[in-house]
Image (cartoon, rainbow, N blue to C red; front, side, top):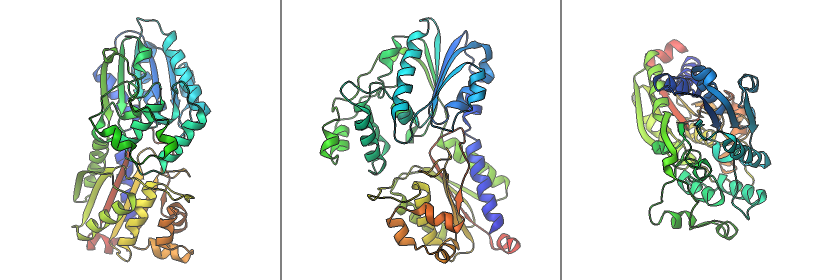
Length: 419
């Protein structure tokens, strides 16, 4: 299976390269050039790469810049050469640096001449790395809320509903600070449906919620959180402040780029466009069962599953959890391997992107003293997968379009040649 595993990694990396933040911004601006001087505001996990993509095209048109990302995701030397102010905010739980970045963001906007156009570059992770709290709320309340959300298993819509209620800039709140300025925004989407009102918790796009959404999101909240949430939602500014909003990279593009590489490698390839957002353990088992019934070739899915964490979780993230559950289904099958990984290179704490498992993963893990069910129950998939040698580490990728799941069922002839 060594060649099959190597091919699967190639396919994943091609999917990530297809949505690279620098290239996506550069390509868009080459096709839709901005006129005149501008200030660039880049926010989120892909902020650094997106900012460099803007500089590649706009060069001296960029007269001021601000970039906020999570620690380790900025090319500080390259951005500093172009005069960018640089901030690193807490992620996945916002911290004091996230609030500092929020203050810097508002100050940056306020100092720009009214006639200067602003170019926003927004990607996933923005919700945590930059924040301005509503009056009466403090950092401890913000952190407690986000820690609870991470283990809640809630979907992105419900999570954003709660985040917006605490924030002065989310849910279109940042529009109030723009005061009719000329603005363009390029977005790397990490949400289903690529809705600008959801990406980064919708800093620049306010959207009224359908009746009942707020109530359903609130139904199972603990009392301490319910008391903080403003059921009326965040304040918003004038949507006319926004001149252009463009999605420049998305999960759809990543899936298609991965599929193109799989075909280039000679595999029959099927892209499944259903969005995978179920609980990770159930999703992993279901996708693995599909592989057991599938014809040989590459099968590609995408989405963002969830994990409801126990009180004291171990090491790992949703992709590792999903891949480990899949490993339990494909155990003993020498012709199947399966990958699940985040396109941003992050899958929970630990710096791993996800995992690539095969039919012998659990046998390798047992030799190191691990058992499947106990590991899943303890949300400690990363420890088992480290022992079995199945973790994927990419480092920051410069993009963030949720997760790719890729399965490979090898034809008998290829498997024999590999052996």
